[in-house]
Length: 436
Image 1 (cartoon, rainbow, N blue to C red):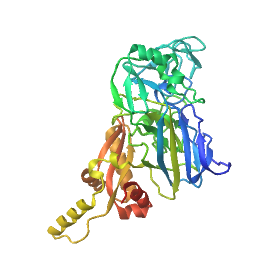
Image 2: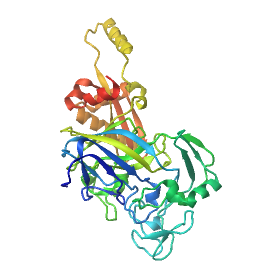
Image 3: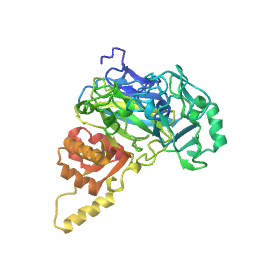
C-alpha cells in the first residue's frame, strides 16, 4: 500500500480496527526510520469477544507505515514504555455458544434469535445475558464465562486484587470509565459481565503486549495472526476462511509472550510495503502459557521506537528479551565465567578461544505446542544457516523452549555465535541489549 503523507519523527495513534489486519487496512504515517510510535491501546480478547459487530478477537490500532520498510526487511521495534490505564478489568475461562456463531465464535458472530450476522447490539443491565440484538432483543454474545473474576489495579504499587460481588458490581456501574476505554474504541467493556468467582486473590502487575507486530500479507482477523488461532481459518465456512498457503503469510503478531514488555526488542518480518506496525491486547500480567485462555486485558499506552533492518529475511518475529527475562542458560557468561571456560578448555588441550555468542529468541507457532516448537526451530535454522539438529543442541544447553500461549506459540532461545549475528546485521542490537 502506498502512503503519501509526509514522514514524521513521531506518530501518535488512537484509531482502531474492528478486529482485522492485512493489506486492505489503510495505513497511517509514515513514521521515520528511527522514529517513535505512541499508541493508546484498547483491551483485547473479552471486550471484542462480546461485541458481535467485531470481525476478530481484538481491537488493535490501525497499522503505521515505516519509512523505507520493504518486503523482506526486518522491522526493529524497541518497546520503550508500557503503561496500564485501566482501573479495573474482568476475565476468566470461556465457553463458546455454538448457536451464536458460524463456525468461529471469535470471528463469525451470529444472532441466535434472528440469525443476523455480525448483529448490531446494545447493553441491557449487567451479566452474561446483557448484550442484546437490536433487531430481536435476544442475548447475542458468542461466549459464556464459566469461571471469572473482576480485578482492580494500583499502578503506583504494581499490585492487583480480585474483587468480591459488591466490588464487581461497583466496577460494572461504569464499565467504560473503569476500563479506561479509549474514546475511539467501539468494544463493550467486559466489566459488564461483573464476574466474581475468584475473590480477594492478590497478584503483581507485569504488563506486556499480547498482540504487536507487522501486517500480514493476507487479510485475517487480528487475533488469528498466529499459527494456532490461524488454523481455525483454514477451510472455515465464513467470509474470512483461508487456505493453508494463505496462513503462511502470517506475521505472528498475536504472540501472548509475557517477555514482550518494556525493555525488550522485537524484530518483525516485513511482508507488505511499509511494514504496517499495529498493536493491542495489552495484559496486566500473565503466567507462561495463558492457560485459562485469557488474562487481565487492559487499556494502556505504549511507546515504541522503530527502525528498518534491510534484507534480514526473517520468516517470523525475533525477540531480544530483557536480560532478566532470559532463560538461565541463555544469559551471557560473565568475564569470570568466560575465563573459567577458557581455562577448562586448555586443560583438555583445546587452545582456540571459547565461542563469542549472544542470546536470540525465535517465535514459533502452530496448531499445537509440538508444531510450534518445530516451527521455531526451523525458523532459527533457516535464518542462521544451521541444521535443525544444531539448533536443538544449542537450545538444549544454552537456552530453552518457553510457552507463550498454550495452544501453540513458543519462544526458542539459544546463544548464537556473534559472527553469525554480525553477518545478519543483528550483532549491534544484541550488544546493545546485553552489554556485550
